[in-house]
Image 1 (cartoon, helix red, strand yellow):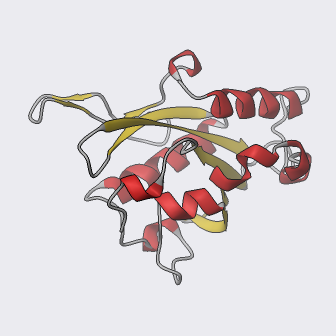
Image 2 (cartoon, rainbow, N blue to C red; image 1 turned 90 degrees about the vertical axis):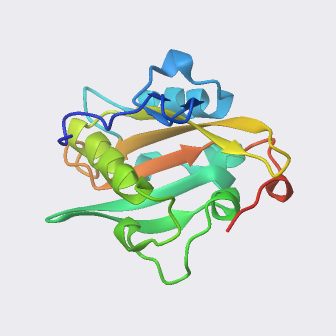
Length: 180
């Protein structure tokens, strides 16, 4: 995969389970909050220019704040620094308190850290949102779909310097999952 091509995803024939799906059409995203933020983000674009962080008003998206992660983008080399993590994002995707960059995280499932970094680079390079479908298994064995979106922000309207990430955990209880 290169920065212009999304990471591969789909059905895992060896396990017989649905695998993580990245860069799915918005029409396949079964999350009203993610579709809503996408509409909000698109309303902030002007004349083909990406919105900046200053264009995103937390008071206008209060219900989404617990699920938002803001990442500062550094380009040489490409890295994403965690700037802010919503309370529900922290609850469902805990990280070590000392983790400042995604590539420093150690609590990812095997291979996922590289996938996440590749996805962030894809969005930053392509300068467009991307959406994903994942799943989590409860401690009772039920499989729950999780939808996510990643949106680029650019202070100058062109060069991406921040990413907004939302994973929709609304309606889920952390008590139902074996979280690290």
